[in-house]
Image (cartoon, rainbow, N blue to C red; front, top):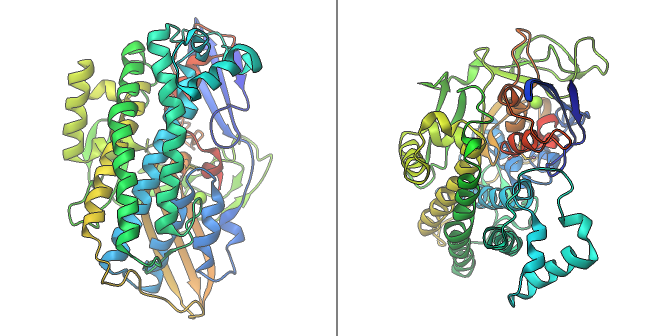
Amino acid sequence: MVKRISPLTRIEGHLKVEVDVENGKVKSARVSGEMYRGFENLLIGRRPLDAQRITQRVCGVCHEVHGIASSKALADLYKIEPPPNGKLLKDIILALHMSIDHILHFFTLALPDYVDFSALSVYRGKDPKLNRLKEWVVSRRPWLYTKKVPGNYIEDPQTAIPLVAAYIEAFDKLSLGASALATLGGKAPFAHNVFPGGVSVELTMDRIMKVSNIVDQLLYFVKTKYIPSAVEVAKRYREYFYIGHGYMNLLSYGGFEATGTPLYTPGIMINGKLYPLDVDQIVEDVSHSYYDGEAESFRKEETRPHYGKKGAYSWIKAPRYKGHPMETGPISRILVTPSTRESFLSFLKREFGVGIKEAFSTNGRNLARAFEAKLLLEYVNKALSKLNPKESTIVTVNPEANVTGTGLGLSNAARGELLHYIEAENGRITKYQMVVPSTWNFSPRDYKGQPGPVEKALEGTPVRFAEGLIEVGRVIRSYDPCTACSIH
Ligand code: NFE
Ligand code: MG
């Protein structure tokens, strides 16, 4: 029996999922991106510096990440290097953004999969925000918060109400984080201070102190609310260490190096084994995507849309590494890097008594995200202490320079690893290619017929609450899907 979910809600963009359910389990799955956007093509013919502004508009969730990846590709194209302050500031903006993006994912997008918000109807405390939400739940908008989709939710008020309280607090933290991003990036969303040669903020002690104060508050929230909430949910839903397993193939570009002690190292894992990263093994296959062309290295690739192409079912391309579908995300950076792998696995052992196999799971991904939020904010603290307000933050490039050449930017985003590649001739873009985290995770089948990472992870998912397929939704949301990004 084929069940179709479209559009999948509480994600960014338009995603369609079809699962073939047999004997109460998903037998196979097809994941499709449902629209064409064409950012890579609309950049052709423009000035290279435009790329950094325009690509940020790929997404309203991960707004800073494309600007930063593009700035790295452009620095490579113009053969310039930001001064130490410039590199630190780019890392700080990226890490701050990613940490609040993780908070947004867990509380706003994923938590309603697990908690019955109507538990709030018995709340007797004095918190004004909880009481306001209670009023909505009880009388104003009961249909919004009472469970619409059948599922095994957390209903007991002792567990549910603190989770809902943290959900409400998360909104304040998102706004605080955005204010720190605007202080350094010029505005949020879409940082306009980020350039290939650094960041154009006037670096004052005042600004550094403001950001540092916000980082302390965010870190406190992550340690006392985010991680404990994620642990609480994973303990209550232990079976999700065994649901949503997927391939044991991971991709990491490394990153957060400006302090001199890199947080992550580049590398890949195939079938649970680690190998060095070779970027030239990255190829995008379009056999089942609505594009013409061969499976091609991103350096040779073009984006040629062809709606209705025979055998195609998605606007998402299928990136492969040496022919392997690869998962990317906080889990991939953490498990590929030796130091973070060790600390994350001892956290899993201590809290849940599980090991690396169970890390490849719905719970594993959600926990890795919470764990990474803490790592990133600690990194920001270190990076802030290394800023020097007496030194420059940027080297400039002439926007009218008639540059000819290529540029590669390997960078990170909340949902995984991000690649931007540019070619220019006489000061005009001739090619722009992005290989984006959700493109890896949500890719369709390839020419060998191999399912994409999420399609694979869905196989075997139990479907006990068939009406709403809540279990399928939980697996998919553990990847924090962004269809807007995946199609770009
Ligand atoms: Ni639109 Fe994005 C992130 C990027 S996911 S959210 O994080 O790049 O592909
Ligand atoms: Mg692309």
